[in-house]
Image (tube, rainbow, N blue to C red; front, side, top):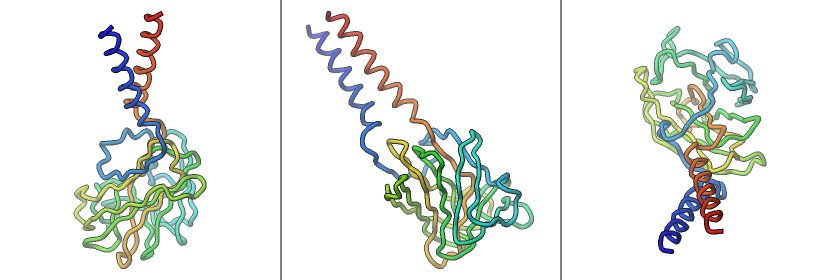
Length: 219
């Protein structure tokens, strides 16, 4: 009897842990990209040819997910380290820039995602504050976050990473911006998570499987 009760309690704990991953949506700031399992990305180098692009601009991820990028009027697309293009991304990174002060880069997903983010810097050198906002498909604000950064031309991969993750696939739009007076915003490769974390699925499957096993055994 004690063994049976202990097993049931263990199953309940597993279900609680797994259920927390599928609870009501809660948006959280992501500053360390290694904490999220990214499934897709958009590399701005091929959407379109590097140069100037009018807003809005359509792009497609490596896995075929469509996104639309919009801002005040035009984008500048460039590669870190080429033709005098500087920043504190890594040399070879493809970058999309909104050159207008106090404007933003808005990324809309054709299919809502669990998480999204990118490295960011301001167009103006020095200390800045980076902002990110996440919205659902009804344009409801899911979360608004900020992170301090420092823009330079060292090409040392020190650009801050700023992103948002949610417990459900409800992020339909992300807005990247910097504080006023910083001369616009730049981001590199857009990272996306379009399927849930493997650990959450495993915990849920394990809990349900264990519960079914003990129910059959009890009968």
